[in-house]
Length: 208
Image (cartoon, rainbow, N blue to C red; front, side, top):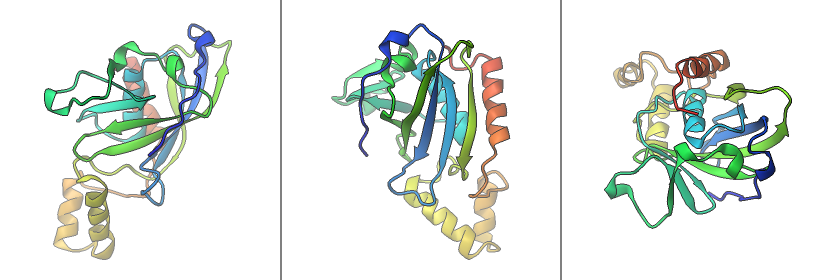
């Protein structure tokens, strides 16, 4: 999955700015697409963006994550068995507007086991007279994200196939209970996603 590095808005690092981002899960293989569109303060850290993406998508932040930008990994410190030759930096110490540029595309990976790869596309950037003060909000999206620990793309395919082909079977009912008691793959709850983000901001999760 390719990404397009472009020159970021380095002249605007200290000025209030807003990015509109589209986050799509495995856009090359997941159809119909699972995606979210968010507006975020450009001065937040990549670590905070990670938390906002978790809330917007519906993940529970139960696993490791990373951003890969211009052949550099931005992530929390990784266990030794997950380290490789890719240069790494602390995502808590890097601001969005230092790296993200108009129309740029960047990779965000969640859960090294299930390997959920998201493509982040910068749809627009603008400076603003209003200070967004670390805010973020979801403006659009489609479909639910897969359940945690479902087994990646193939596991999710098998999960959906069981629910759709034999919804009343014992196997399907067991899967629904395992997924939390209910699961609708077509459901996107924008209000719930924004409520989760607001709780996060209120409780100061994810740092700056």
